[in-house]
Amino acid sequence: MGIGIRIENLRKVYDTPPPSAARGAGFSFMAQRSTGPKEKKEKKKKFEVVALDGISLEMRPGEVFGLLGPNGAGKSTTIGVLTTRTRPTSGRAFIGEFDVWKEQVKAKRLIGVVPQRPNLDFALTAREVLLFHGAYFGQSSREREHRTQTLLEQFKLTERADDMVRNFSGGMMQRISIARAMMHDPQVLFLDEPSAGLDPQTRLLLWDIVRDYNRLGKTIVLTTHDMGEADSLCHRLAIIDHGRIISQGTPRELKASIPGGYLLRLRFDHAPEELLAALRSLPGVTEVRSADHIAADVYADRGGPLISGIVTAAQAAQAELRDVHIAEPSLETLFLHHTGRSLRD
Amino acid sequence: MNWKTFYALLSRDGHVARRNLLPMLLQNLLQPLLLTFVFGRILTAGGMMQAGYKTVLLPGVMAISMVLSGVQAVAMPLITEFQFTREIEDRLLAPMEIGWLAVEKIAAGMVQALVAGLVVIPAAWLTMGSGVHFHFRPVEFAVICLLVAMFSAAGGLALGCSVGPTQIGLMFSLVLAPMMMFGCAYYPWSFLSKFPVLQYAVLINPLVYASEGLRGTLTESDHINTMVVIAALAAINIILLVVGLKKFHSKAVS
Image 1: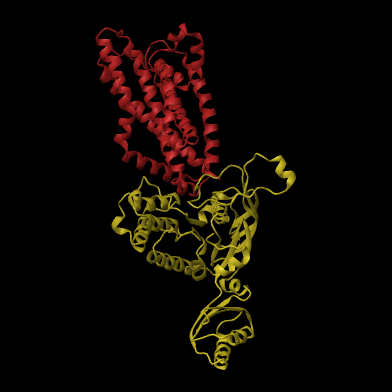
Image 2 (image 1 turned 90 degrees about the horizontal axis):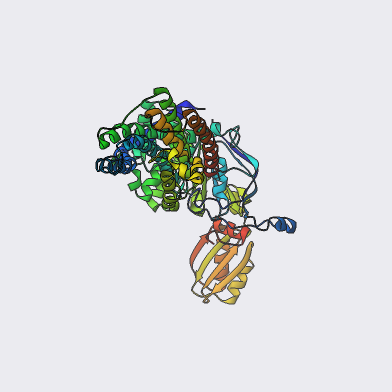
């Protein structure tokens, strides 16, 4: 039995600068002054940043849900509210049946949190971090010992278990953070940009761990600005920008919503004008750009089905098709499509 | 209220404190003890100070040690834990109302203040050699000790949640140093009668009540009435607790 999450019309306005990196490093959203002229006059000198601007979301029990957006979009603030660490200005959020602001303790029992940047207790060793975390959640000492041992092994930290965590490398800190979040076997696991700063190998290890944990029926919420991660890990996604939800659905649904999202990169021995004209007239093609008289980029609403038409057109123009590459619609193009800017901007 | 969690948090602080026991004791006790040696032994032996000064000095040194220990035991970790690494976050996510974490910090700070105070009595007595005249009133002494420990820990909470890591030096020179000098630790409050404005101004300094209270319950030297001291310490405790908890909340939740 998984636990779902519901967010209703959530707003968060910071009236003091949020503590830098309070929720981790990249806590640097764009300042959005309130726009009403009257309002503006009244609060001229007041610091005001709208981090969340009326977000409503539903995350289903047992799914991996991704919040995707650039730095400062409001992802971490959303996680902050859901994990009781940020007070919402208005709106409500529920973990299962519990209002996260009004029933904090009950909500806290259900969640595990992996912060954007490791916030480990530097006064402790890796083993103690896990043991004390288990104790905070009321685990018996036998249960604690057993679970600590299992997690240390799973995360390949057994050898360094009795070293102070302050001497750990970034990747090891991240691993112990995740182990800590799983220590009390939470029903919902929050990961705030879990793979930022990890090498590709550790990132794959992390993805496996997340998938395995999800298979146990746990709900997983992660934020990322990595399209590949969102695509390969998440069942459903919401794209956030400037504190608003721009779009949501499965990765496939989202990608399908881009008009003419496919890009076919073609190379010929030569590409005469009549060939380009023939390509333009193929069904579903929105644009053809040629370069150097040998290459053509075809933007279309389909990929593979166009190939036979392209081959026929090439034969008719007595040109030889030498290379084809089909780029599927990506979340990157989707984000570009919805916001007019790239995720990395 | 979740006692299991509270106890686990307390044992975490106990564990860390035990690990740092020696440096902590040196940090909090060495300076007062050196001072005791200079004023209570060298200067009295040379005749520059009267022998009776030892009896005046010992309760004051004890008050300073307790207050420094309590304030630092709570404030210093909080300052570190609330800065960008947010080490405290894990404990804020423990299944308990976050206000209780502040209460737990105060409880742990009180224990450290009491330990420091109780270590100082024999240590200072040994440093000064003979000549301290005790007049012990156990019940009042215990009450004063608890109140002093609590105000130092609550004060540590308020300071720790108001001061940033870059202002620690400033905290010592602007808050703690004047507090120690005008805390009636090195002289009884009645000695300030020649400086009437100062005599009443120092009454906002909680260390005055700590020194005078310990002086009154540990020795027979001149001191402010113990009941007045208890009332003042209780009032200071309430104020610092309210301020500290409020600051803690605003620091803990964004």
